[in-house]
Length: 92
Image 1 (cartoon, rainbow, N blue to C red):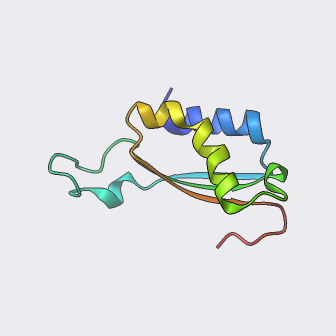
Image 2: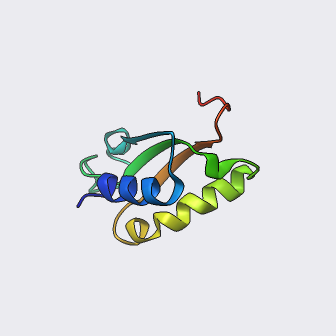
Image 3: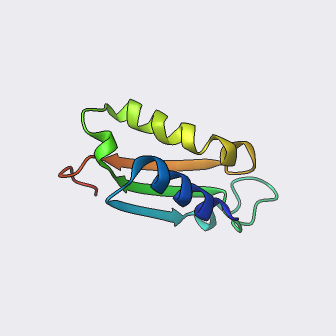
């Protein structure tokens, strides 16, 4: 299973999002490290809307997601940009 599929499965199971988008942005980081060509799944952007975020601060929302993806971060995922909103909040 790749990182995107693994993360999608974990988030859908734990947070029951009404909207979930996972974008591979690894190609945008090619050359940032000497031997990195931008391939694979090392840099992801996550856009999620979930009732689980109602009443939660931005920091708490990020902590919830970071806890879910800790295994992937330990196994080669370098960075994840998180846009986490409750229903009715704008994702831009």
